Length: 110
Image: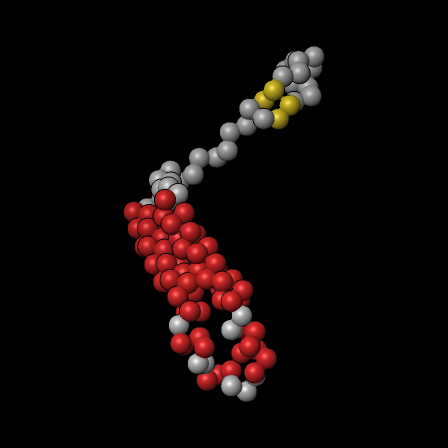
């Protein structure tokens, strides 16, 4: 809503002027299905990465990592339970994000 200081027809009138946004063109069926498919892919990827982040720090894959043999300090840091819990917590946040996106999805067919 915007206020008009002076109406050209009546210079003494000070009234609110309601400005409507322009009408949007309708969304095609392909666009709606593209958004739905993107949502399904996004939720699937977030759930998969979240499950991996929750489980990986507590498996032998994490402790017997051959990539970290040259860096014993980094390997020692990654074996810390706090770091493992932090990575698992990120996995929980990722799963929460996927569920929230799926539940809060709304289609705008305007």
